[in-house]
Length: 400
Image (tube, rainbow, N blue to C red; front, side, top):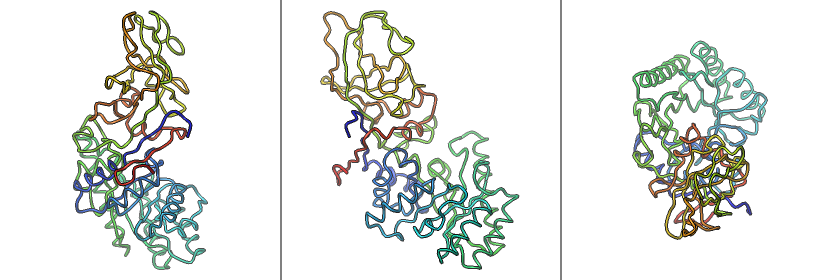
């Protein structure tokens, strides 16, 4: 609570983005993906906002996250039937029985997972809810077309024995943000492979209740992949899956995260002075330099050193300032401008520095930091450290 940096999350923006994504896929159910602490935005507040905004499902990657989420939803008085939760990553010998007792939906890609889930279902005394995952071209999780027949046969036996309920059949698109001919062909192949898997299931008497393939890119750009349910991920947080294809503003999305900290130092530095470790940047003349008390321990990527910008909210209005020198563990330096004997400091200690905000408001955004660091906006928001206090705001709930 005493760390100078903070993350302010606009829950109204979360709700707005979910409505916008629902407009893009009006005939499918919507899952709000809140994995990785809701992409750094705060697991339970975002999950509750998503449910209130009309999302019918929640999704997280790790089983441990799902158990934490279910416990939080229970404390909030959310009926489990009103908030189904899908989780898709767990190691062998995971606490499957606890997952089944917590009414979690479990992804099954391989027969060894099914065997462990079935054993847990027998122990608990009720069937497990499963989603069969097919490897449609990502070569990550999911049963390959070659392995799928054996898995489907085992699932059919488990269904007959009353040990599992097949809720879903699903996969993930690897190039849905790629509008090139190869990218479009890849997406088409993913869809075709999933539908072929569905036909195989039906021949074995297994009828999944839901089919889902599309995440944000599929929702926005590939309506044929919407099927029965879509998974709103990065778009739910107001960020574009690929700003080169379309920006958040182009898509009608509002960034929900603002990362900010106060200036802790403003000083005049003489010309040709080295700044930060290694002296990789030297003052080109007398300069006003500011110090921001966040660093790579807080998720501020060191690879963005010397290329990123921030927005300083001064008494005279917003000031765009370049980050200079290397990002340190707990702080970095910004260039506030020339410092002649007659010029006053353009900013003061205590002025708010917005590292990540809303470009529509004239602030540096997650996409800007991603470009500076040579990465993607997903990494910028999910790497924000736990030291930064999360403040959740909305017109309905001023502070939660």
